[in-house]
Image 1: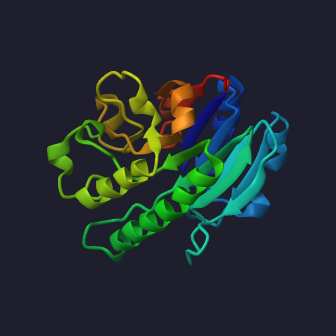
Image 2: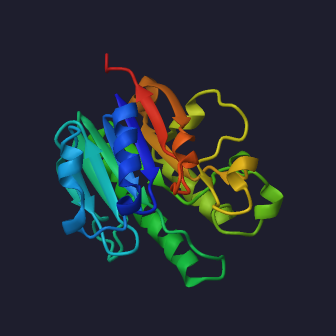
Length: 257
């Protein structure tokens, strides 16, 4: 089984890249963030032609999440139960015996912004919900753009980023709280080269200099962690003309014993 996540920063713009990538990588499940598409515009037919079922929750211009799967998606959940939030940031479904969750975590803007408080409250609500999901389903994968670089090694220059969103202590504590419910960072289950990132600013030659952050993650429950064979960031799509500012993250798993 191969699971993947990708913040495409507009599916309308990036659809040809996504279709080509699906044909090359052939993941069993792909979680998408920042689709920025209203539901009636979602490219269901184009994805079905490649053999993918789709569940999606979108809005115009901002946010938007989707799950693409080779097997049918069942028990689809839009949003976080009990959380009043009009932003389309959460989508969950069961496929192939795995409960997959797609998250697009709020950015937070700045530490003194109301959006930062919203982010922390949002993450707390998501943690409480996911704790129940892990207990009920057992085999769970939480994928997406978390807008949190968990450790200094996930930041190209911790000194330059000190005091900013994405790296603050409360955000990192919220990320660790997700791990505390029994989730594991798939990339950190395996030896990795230094300076592995998933997001690079469009300007200042950031990609060429590898001035990036690792903010896109695949978190898996204990059973899936034991089956995880590898996890990588595919930087290839970031080099395309008109790319997303994020690269896909992929994790592969052995078949259950």
